[in-house]
Length: 235
Ligand SMILES: O=C(CO)[C@H](O)[C@H](O)COP(=O)(O)O
Image 1 (cartoon, helix red, strand yellow):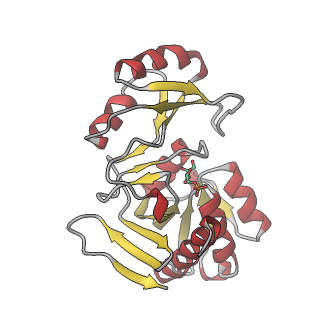
Image 2 (cartoon, helix red, strand yellow):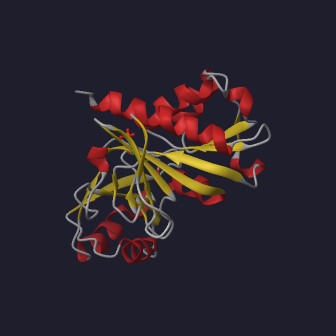
Image 3 (cartoon, rainbow, N blue to C red):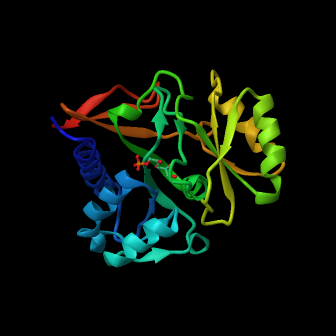
């Protein structure tokens, strides 16, 4: 029986193999944040001479990559990336996600928006029929914490301030439990429109293009509906 960390390591290694098929010596790789991504960074580091550099979605991932000898560029220096690789807290079968358990959601969304393909790497515990059991992280400007909380309560959520946590952008995180999310892109757009919201952990307006999902029986691919079926790529 594989532990959750072993499942994360397996999917990270499969993602590194996949990433290397997309990267050229001049390519810049987009890198997310979290414990699954930490394994991905470790796996890709030994192949760092096969791509030019990375762009990071957090100070945490930047430190880890630099410690392992991967060059990290400022996003302002980069115009295109073939792929962005990141984890998720929940992903549904349409490849909509809830992200931000690590608080890096805003930079993750920005970096992902530059990449041609978003590759989500998760263990199977993250795959759900409907998003919303994981409290939705919302980054806010600190002075707007209460007004945004009231608006989120009006949407049916129960926002709780993530105590003692400040994002890399100087923002605060409200973790919003209890939201009903039948239409993730609609809710994402609605929350994005609340003044004081910096970013919302729903990734549905632009979801993932491909998910690699690790289970006891191997790593399988989940494609966006219409983009092909699921198949096992490693056992
Ligand atoms: O969105 C994220 C960080 O903001 C992470 O991708 C998400 O929280 C999953 O993390 P982990 O791989 O540690 O389970």
